[in-house]
Amino acid sequence: MKSAIQTWGARLRATWLLAMALGLLTACSTPTIDRYAGTSPTLDLRTYFNGKVMAHGLFQDRSGEVIKRFVVEMDCQWDGDNGVLDERFTYADGTKDRRVWRLKHLGDGRYSGTADDVVGTASGQTRGHAFRWQYTLNLPVDGKTIEVQFDDWMYLIDNQTMLNHAKMSKWGIHLGEVILSFHKP
Image (cartoon, rainbow, N blue to C red; front, side, top):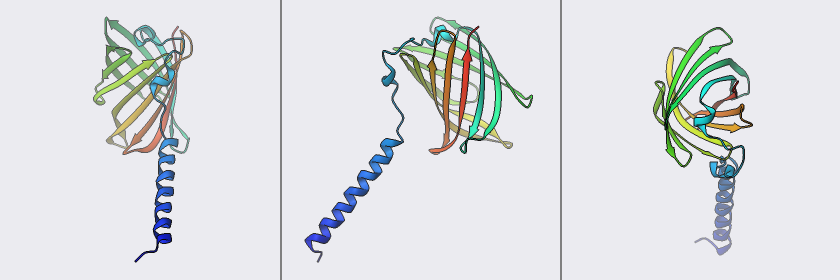
C-alpha cells in the first residue's frame, strides 16, 4: 500500500508534467487571425490581387538553408466574388512552373480556393492588414509527389507591398518555409 507521501509525490509529478506539456503546446501555437482585427491598411484580396503583381521569393529547408529562389509574375482578375490568380514561376536554375488559383470571396473576409496541385479546397480569412491561408499541396520531390500542408500568412505593408511567410509541414513535422515579397506596379 502506497503511503500518502508517495501518492502526493506521484500526483505532483503528473501535474508538473501536464503543466510542462501544456506550456510547450502554448509556446508552439500560432496566433489567430483575429489578433490583427482593426489594423491598417486593411487588406482586401480582391483589390490587392487585381491586375499585374510581381513577387520575389525563396524556399528554406528546416535548417534555414536556401534551397530555391524564384520570381513570380501574376495576372489576377476578379468577376464579383470570383477571382483567378495566374502565377508563373521562374526559378533561379531556369526551370518554370505555373499555378492557377480559382478563389471565391465568401463574405466577412473569408475566402476559399482551388488549384490543380492543391488537394481539396484551401481556406483563408483576412483581418485588418493580415491574411491567413491554409491548404495541402501536391509537391514534386525527387521524382515523387508528396502532400504537404501550408500555413500561409500575408501582411499588407502598403497599397503596393505585401509580405508572405508560409510554413510547410508533413504529419506535423516542420519541413521548411517560403518567404515572398509581393509588389504591385
